[in-house]
Length: 296
Image 1: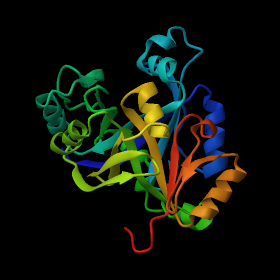
Image 2 (image 1 turned 135 degrees about the horizontal axis):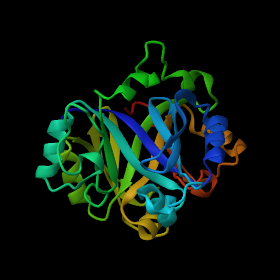
Image 3 (image 1 turned 120 degrees about the vertical axis):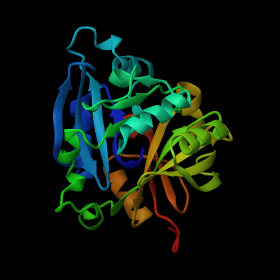
């Protein structure tokens, strides 16, 4: 059930054109993977855009379609508004993964809900209550894998470091908020096969954190340890869910100056990490980090 690269991170919005223009303007994302795509089965519009080593899916319910609010993504938007939604990974052995999830009591949604994948592969979606946030696993044998620009020989994930004002290396980690750190850690290690690579407490974010390597990416599981923070407010308002994405940059001061020029406000920072105001990033918390010299 090998889990590999992140397929995408979904950023839900009520104005897809505005959000896509923002990603183009602020990050200079690479396009051509999937643009302006409507999916009838989900009544949603979306694109896939590449930023460093990760793909982000700006997504909105198809408001023009009757009944959009009755579909899962429509219900999510009505409840949470603009927010990070979920994490999707590529997986090598989707059949083994399906059985692993089932045997551990993880509810599966979508076409694979009632029976394991067959010769015709389909994405596997988890129930968000069982995996802290919704997770998707896309079999690498599906055709869309071959369209991913990151797997093309001419793709340079360091382009944003050498050519963009942010000096962006790629994704450092993505954060999932939980009320039960032990249960969440069990799910992401024992069930999903991740490896704990660190634990810490952050005065900046006001959280206790466990860092888990899953496939090629790092997930930060976090529980707030005090109130009055972005994490605490998000958990109180929305419950357990996908909370933030953190990108590594070369120079934190330079990155903050650039973000300010794009009207993105800093809500808190220390010597190594910036937390941006989600009101200035379309409802989704972004972080930018520049590790101390000698840090991994």
